Image 1 (tube, helix red, strand yellow):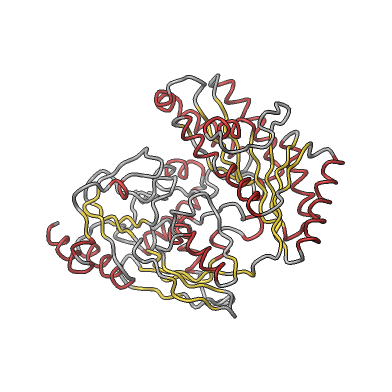
Image 2 (spheres, rainbow, N blue to C red):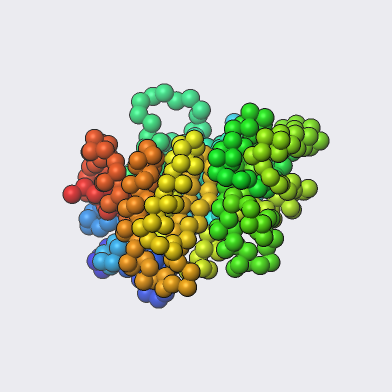
Length: 473
């Protein structure tokens, strides 16, 4: 391996081939539940260096693990424990290449932090709508590799829907340049969509052309108390009818999830936290091109109708962007509060919106019966049917022992229930290495073999992120 390391140093410079010291930033996953060991952390500075690194690894049959901001939740971007894999960090590829105002696009490199894209677009007078809790750390390459979702999918779609083109290094070390930014290109297989969501198993995304949108003239946010999940679904339908495409966010949060925020972050003001009669809250957002006064009148009329129909029992409307950000901060603090409460079992599931109330009622009862005392942290993107249906140990229990003794059983119960309701066990976090077994269990044999055929065809050496998403053997 010394020959390979010497070659990698020649390509990217010795300072960018890390083999010693504290490499936990690259070798440990975001939730600190898994730790691997890399042969080296390699940090190329441009696309040609990425291609040369891949070529060098392919020549020695050395596998690579591409990594962006290392904020993934499915253990898909850290090396295994063998000490033989090269960790390919894309963080130095962080340039904004261009903004095409007429085409409403921005071409950026894979290592650009998502928040940088948002701010760059805003400074140029545009909106880049992808938004998620890790936006200060995650990179657009990782967002594309996992097809990240976030809080505005209900209007703008997942990351896939925001991408018009990619630049990708193949497993052989060649470069596919596809960043033209065309909205129509019907020339054969859609290689862009094939790469998006493939989690670095089919190619290394080095740059992308992303869609931009005009900045909204008005942005309105409300926090509403609802009597049940059924009422939350009713409110969602009403919001679609009254706000149309202006509905940009629709989040649901269970009482226990919000109680953890109030407990661990007392400085945050959680609306209706002390009201035991409020089992769920909804955070909804409307972005509009019309004037603030007209948009607010329509938004408040929606809430008045919701009160009259009984699907909202109380509500707070943000008076300005500062208050809106405070409400969103409460919602985005739920995962942090759950981490403060202790190790937990996370589920990122997708169910048809209409079936979510029945799924939650049935699965809540199932878990309470099978594992008494479990606490359910239920929240997520109701607008697109994506729930983070997480499970916390009983109050005062040993969290590590709880995971050791019950995690496999709980996962089986939850994912079997998801399948019963025709849902997906991974909505926006991907498969990684954490859920490979679940994919093999819940995906059809035909789909699995199609995936394997694609992997074998594009990466016959199986050097890109092997063992992630799909197993070949």
